[in-house]
Image (cartoon, rainbow, N blue to C red; front, top):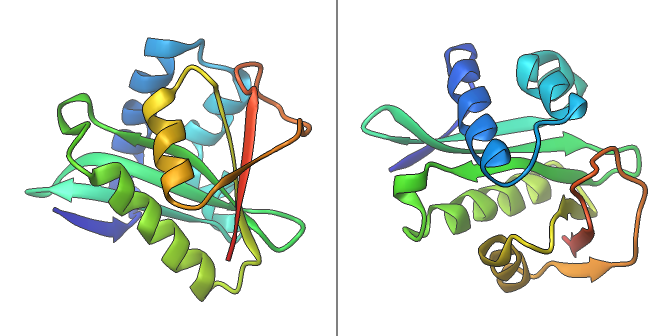
Length: 150
């Protein structure tokens, strides 16, 4: 298993991995489509990062860091292929985000999620995230906001 920086050839896998988990639990929203159809323009060109988890060269997970106006980074579009869930890959992706956030000089990592995603919430809490009170969001599915100081 290796976690690598996003390359243009990962765009299709980034989109399909995210569409799979979002569609399983929620409805794909306009903001999802906007980011998933143009990760280069919506994430990377704005100072963000995307990491892809590869197993034998095959993408099996991903996560993005979106640069925020306050100097922090939002952890977004994090998912692991169904067959890899429970393997610790989510933790590895989050560790990479924390490492990258520190290297980028971020004061904090922020994320938006849903209270129905128990395993994800457990991971975030284990990685040092704490809940915030409601924040503005473009996602109808979001009902939990969290941050982790760096």
